[in-house]
Length: 229
Image (cartoon, rainbow, N blue to C red; front, side, top):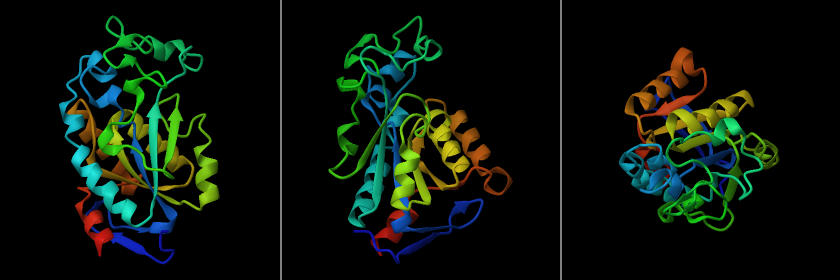
């Protein structure tokens, strides 16, 4: 169980120090699915190099291990749709053309379809029993998932964001969280984009004007060290 009294203050954070109480904080790992981060998935089908996304796995794994030792709440998200694509609007379904699209056959099964191998979270970050797995039909983790109500019932006020991609699902989820009153911190070395400039610009936007959306830590090691103390 997480200590109700344990509070951590991170100092190497933009735009300024970030304080969190472990019992009121959840670690969020956005869409570390095979379809996005491994060769042969949807990310690569869109013409992207997945190598940078695989590069953040060790940092997330280290943070996740430290977080689990403290008994903190962990949330994994998966983007995907049922086999009949009933919750996938045409505006999203057309993405990928003329290459592979959502629902098309790929090396790991039908792309972004629940139950297919590519939809699953990579083995290195696989959820443990008791951790939350949120299946989301959109880019943000709150839309049509019931997550806000669950977090409120749990007394969660702070969210730590990791995962992919920085400018799409991570940023969307962080903005959704900010609008719902959560204090949000992005761990820079635990998030990545297919486009380095997009990641850098996203972080600038999130931290602008005194943290208009939230905070960003230079890397996760300060938090890992604090958790170990």
